[in-house]
Length: 192
Ligand SMILES: [Fe+2]
Ligand SMILES: [Fe+2]
Image (cartoon, rainbow, N blue to C red):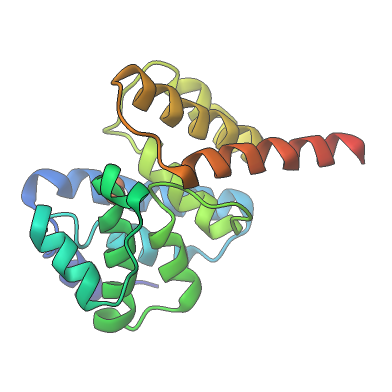
């Protein structure tokens, strides 16, 4: 069980306008963890902390990453929205003493990663489909999240790639690798 003290310490890091998003992510992560047999406590912990450094912007965010020894690639610079996932994971480890797998789920919540654990998939999806989110195709991803985790991840990463392309924004290499890795996983599954 997550203590009230932990919950309020985590939520205190979130700007008031993002609190509903973070609480929604926690509820969705809890639901998905129960559905897919993942550890509920880890899922809720990761969800409550997934955006814990998102309020730190621009040069300050870069400085925090540097302070944590995070190596920033050209791709990261072109998609600065991914930095809070990396610094957030490190912050959660150092300030909250979370388990390594919880930090990994925070680290990959924006771009995904090839070979994601169930916990990583749950946090990636919960962030995208929690109740305050709204975009074309979200209902399909929500229903796949309950029936077919792999198809939900494929639909979610495809949505992210298309959304970024439609806005003529850079697509991080890790997002593309994640999408391709999920397609390979689906091909392997079909072979069995
Ligand atoms: Fe985020
Ligand atoms: Fe988020």
